[in-house]
Image (tube, rainbow, N blue to C red):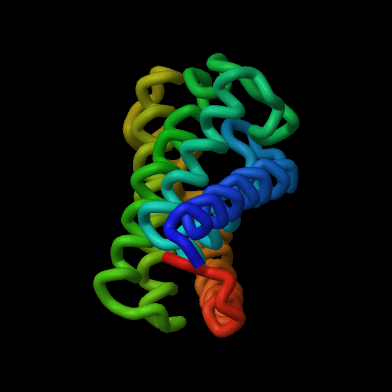
Length: 183
């Protein structure tokens, strides 16, 4: 397979994962300040399967689509208002989270345990970005932001991190064995 074909294939896969993130974003459990969504699971899957470069690129494509107004964010929202609203910190936090998850796996190995560690780290990165943003945006105290934007998501985040690690490693191994993944 030529280099151009590999790049084209990876761009298609990257776009596919951007769409998957948008679909998972519609799986929501409403909470007062910030809903629980499937986005973080999809971010973990993208980074675990695609690695740092293409996993992060898929998140960037997803954020770009949402920023220009395509309703890919939670509850079919989109536009710059979503990026600069109360949940904007979480959305921005997806970028470093995806990069760190993929980078960690590239520097260690693609095993379930490493993927679990990487996805838990990614979860904490996303929650930290979101909580700091929420504190500033909503003019909350650190305690208020933590209780509204971090604490309620820890257990669900750990479950999603485990799912992303488990499913992500299984899918990645199958794609590699079928010679469909070139990262």
